[in-house]
Image 1 (cartoon, rainbow, N blue to C red):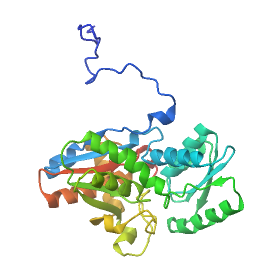
Image 2 (image 1 turned 180 degrees about the vertical axis):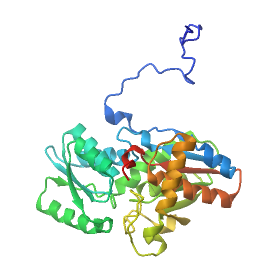
Image 3 (image 1 turned 120 degrees about the vertical axis):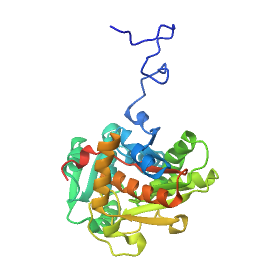
Image 4 (image 1 turned 135 degrees about the vertical axis):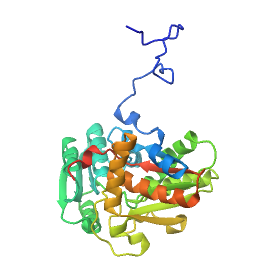
Length: 323
């Protein structure tokens, strides 16, 4: 049987492109967060002639980009004394933030209550409950704003309730500026011509855009929203199937003057592109990743071959197999 190791005294794995680090044991689950790879999307690169790279946020331990803000916001709240031992984390979310907060709460010993639309996938609901969090469902996606107002009232009545307030909390965007954006800059040399990603809370878009701008990157910032609920484009809110995008209002974190373009993608377009990512690129990712790729490819086609565009793969696809 052929040895797995080269006979060079270093015992370097033949199939491993880098030498295995000395320490492989993190301090805990939360220390495995971030530092996700920036992947070239072969199908998109071939179709456009551009370098299209996607941050693989589905590789975070909770399976989504929201793991970053859940850890960051909770840690900041602890340091400021806003979240006390024995406290409750209460958040209104369309899904992934609820999963991430449930994971962080389980690790840190907090009760977590998640309020989310009943329309989200069964997998998302089951994951939240698997982490031991309490789940409360609201009937319509467009009811999120009313649910946020109700949560605010509950926090007034009970000082042990902490509200992450992901739609308005500046720590959301700051987290992405200091981590996601900083990582992209470290992973790429040379100019970035466009950064394209969907808007749920707007934290990823605003934080990464700020990091790129402060690093001197003069790139085009493109926000992506569901065509059926294109509120940033001036349309009325509506129901759609791109979970994690377009909650029916423009979040407080979003600065429209920092965005060069708003791209709209239909649910059917996003689903089809996500399916192709699995079948052509081997990436089983969520529907919002499909929306991001549709928008990124459109921007790339307008720019022409030879440009570099960066987008986000926000979460794993397993949590959408039932929809």
